[in-house]
Length: 391
Ligand SMILES: *Cc1c(COP(=O)(O)O)cnc(C)c1O
Image (tube, rainbow, N blue to C red; front, side, top):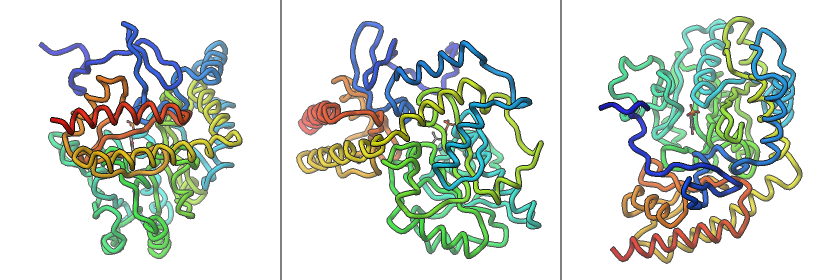
């Protein structure tokens, strides 16, 4: 018999009753160190007092009024994202897929408004994940996400990961934009090669197409900068973000430079819930913390400790771990045994991790972890590795 919850998620074994900082607790009192953070969402840990205060404060005032009216917290969050990024303008949605979907719409509309409606195709990289809507599964191009949902939305081309020559060769008269994750998440925590984003920027400029980044997972401080593109010394034209932006409250955003943003004229796009007062209040509270002096420096330094400890583990247990990848607090451990077995072993020992593609186990802890949490996590992974190596 069918479960009341549609069976897309398998059957989870754990259920949590409460969260506190970097720990989650089951109803029967078991404690787990959460290095999954709800898949890179709870960047400030669970139940951060400043976020609770913002959410409760807004809940007492106004939940929803629609975008028929100005939402002051929305204007403020947009202003702050603009002030702290490449962008000139922001549209708020409720999820990552919506933010990427809008990016794709912006690319098409931009060229259409500029006299090139024939430019509608978007080029993405193999291994990409851009969401689960019809257009974003087409953008991702993964057979496992597309199967059974045909016909596939038209207008996406796929090139090899991190290969500038292939990207350049794929551009044609119908190309509107390039869309990539600076650090691929679901695909296996793969950072784009050094110089790649810069190369893409040059190619996009040369052909008059847009460079669009999917920072739904790698943005909002996860790599030690507010956005991952900052490490590459370039600016995109459009960027989608979501996961960490609400620290656990559903919110996404599409950020854009003036050119593409100006194509989105009144009535051309909309969202009932996007930019609602609750999400905006929490988003502003998240920014209060991420933008505070020293926060991103902390992410960077605790990430360096995590990387060096994990490198040590890879050396000690070559029969279990083949190496690490990613950036900042978005780390992939390439497994020799099945990644699911590593995730299960660590969970047995009180550490939550998340599997990713390419047989990788993902460590995407809250950005507020301290050295002691790194040590606790590494000790558990080491125990799991010892047990798995012995098998
Ligand atoms: C999670 C994710 C998405 C989709 O976000 P949803 O909120 O699940 O729709 C898109 N792109 C990337 C890179 C992601 O990690």
